[in-house]
Image (cartoon, rainbow, N blue to C red; front, side):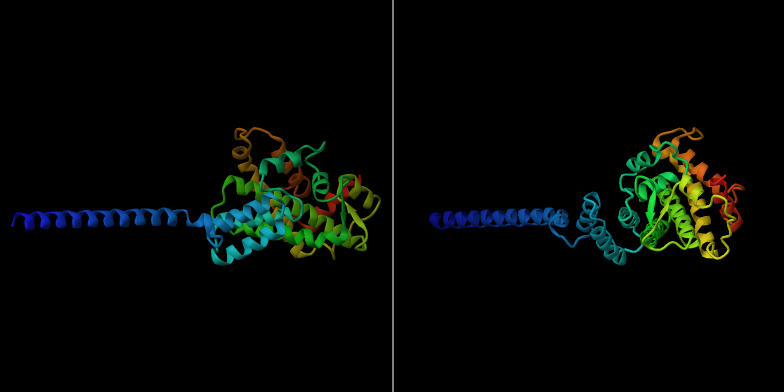
Length: 285
């Protein structure tokens, strides 16, 4: 009788031990499963996080076309995502030689010219060291800049960083629009170049009566007006990016202000054919 009771007790104890061991195993499996799920995106190349990181690395490696394609796919799946839109803008800007991914580096590059407020700095960044832009490249540069601008403008509540980035893109777009107008006005072949500098444009129109009736279309003038407005908005956000106190002068705001005052002297953010003609005429005087 005693042996039977002891045997039952041993059996019962063994069963409890086995049950405890099973519960412990289930707990370990559950914890491991949770950890794997939390880190799943690191191993899952199809996850949002992994694809964003892949695009970011592509931009950093200057593989802009690849980054653009990755981000266009992401945009289709996650419309309105601010991070995707900003990175997509960075990719399009990179295709024309603007490193807006590293905004402060771009700012330094733009303001290190001797006369940073002139159109020269855009010609030097997007063209050759002498500011020469290939006529054959103008359409492609404008298209990429427009796509970069459109991506940022889709962000509903842009940050100061994004607002300044939009201003930089708009400055370059305005200058390239002027180059496009000049190329058409001068009837330049695709094998020729436009010297996108004040001296170059001044020599082009030296002694000429400038009439841009056919070239300064409503669409182009509207684009220029939008660019000027974006540049103006960026001035208010520059302080937060550069660490300069509000109202204090700095190179980038001076560059923006000088360009807008030259092209839009009355400051109404609306560029007319007459204002554009006067601007080009003032460079040759």
